Length: 169
Length: 400
Image (cartoon, rainbow over all chains, first blue to last red; front, side, top):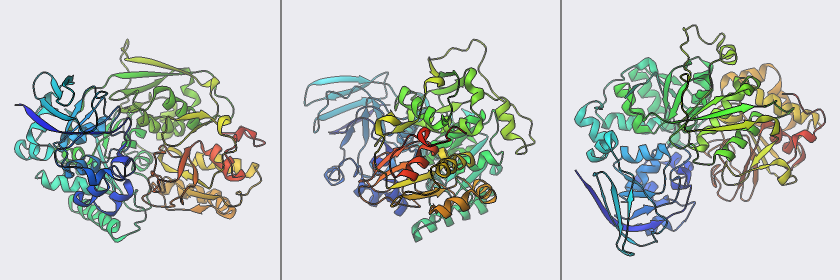
C-alpha cells in the first residue's frame, strides 16, 4: 500500500520543540484540539495558526518535536488539517506520536524546500520520495517500515489496535 | 515487542491516555499493579479544568485498580524511585519525557506519548526499536564544589540537542564512584535533552545504597555484554569541569558561569525532577547561609520539593523553615513552575535562574521571560546576590 500526500510547504527551522508546537499552558486549559489549533506554533510565529490551510505540510529542519513527549503536539497538527511533517530529523517521541495519530513523518533533506512550494510525497515503498514541483527537485527520504508503516497505514494506533486487538510484530 | 514492567502516567498525559484507552476498545488493564499515575503537573489544580482532569484520572485509577499518587505526592519518576516501584533491570515506559531519570537506577526507562501509554495499559506491551548505545566514560577527580548539574549541562552541550537521538547513553568509567545516586539522577534526567531514548548507569554500590530499605525484591540488574560495540564513545574528564549555565532558550546553550557573571536575576526556581531533591536544597541552603543568610532584595526564591518524601525530610531537618524564614515561597511538591502549569509564573521580561532541565522560550508560562539553567549552588548564589554569581566565590563553598 502506498500513502500519497500533496500540499503546500510551511517552513520552520531547527529544534522546534513540542512546547513551541503547543504551549503546556494552553494544554492545561483544554485538551480540545479544535480549540488548541488556534495556538499552533504561537511561540514561533503568532500568525502561523491563522494562516494554515487544510493539506498544508510542515517542513522543518533538524530535531523536530524535541522536548516534552506530550502527544497533543502531534494531535494539534492533525487537527489543523496538516497531514504530514517533513524534517531532516525528528525527536523519537514526536515521531512515535505522529505515527500513532496517522500524521505522516518524513525524514528527508529539507534545506532546498521553500515556504509555499508545492510538494508531492509517496511512501510505502522502499524509499520515500518528495517531489517539489515548484523547484523541480526530488529528494528521497528514510522509508517508514515494519510496525510503524502498519500503524500509519491503519490511520494510527487507535484503528490499528481496534482492528488487531493487540500488537502483531 | 517488549513486555513492560511499569507503565507511568501523569495528569499531563494520563487524561489523554484514558481517552485513547477507550477509543482503542480497552476495558481492563493488562496488569493493574504495574500501572502508576501521579498528579504532578497541575499540583494543586489552579482551574476547574485541571481539577476535572485530576478527577478523571482518580476515577479511572479507582475503577481499574491502578496505583494513584495524588496532588502533593510529587513528580511521577521521583515517586517510583523512592517507593522502589522501579528496580534495576526493569523496562519502564512513562508518558513524560523525563521518565529517563530512572535510568540512574539501572532501569531502561523511556518516555512515550499518551497513545503508547494506553496501548501498554491494554496489552502490557510496547514496541521499541533496539537502540544503539553511546558509551559515556567519566574519568578524573571531582573538583570541589562541582555539582552534578554542571557536569550534566556540560554533557548536554557536548552531545548537542539531538546528538543521542534514538540512542541510549550508557554511563561508565572510573569517576562513576564520585557520583552517588542523587547525582546520577541529574545525568539521566538531562540526557533526554540530547534526544537520548534512555540513559543507564550500571548497578553498583551506589545503586544498592539507594535501594536499601526501599525494596525487598531480588534484584536483576543489567549490564553491557563483554565486548559490546558502541555507536561511539564520549569521554568526559570531570577534573576539567566547573560551574555551567545554560542560556536562553535551549538547554544545550551552555557556557561557563564566568561568561555570564553579573547578569541580573529576578526569580530563582529551586525544584523539579532535575534539582528538587534533598541534597539539592541542602546545597542551596548551604550557599545561601554562607552568603549571609538572606535573599537579595527584589529576588523571588521559589522552592518546590520534587516529592512529599523530599518535603518531609526538609521539614524535619529544618531546611524548609530556614528557606521560608529568608523569604522563599514554598510550593506544593510536584513539577511546580518548570513548565508553567502550576506555581510561580515569571513576569514580563524577567530573568529566571532555575535548577530545571528546560529553558525553552515560554516554558515557564511567559514568552518574554528569559530562563537560565544552573546547579542548586549557582541558583542559591544568585538568590543571595541578585546576579549570576560563581558559587565558588561564596566563602566556605566546596561541600557537597
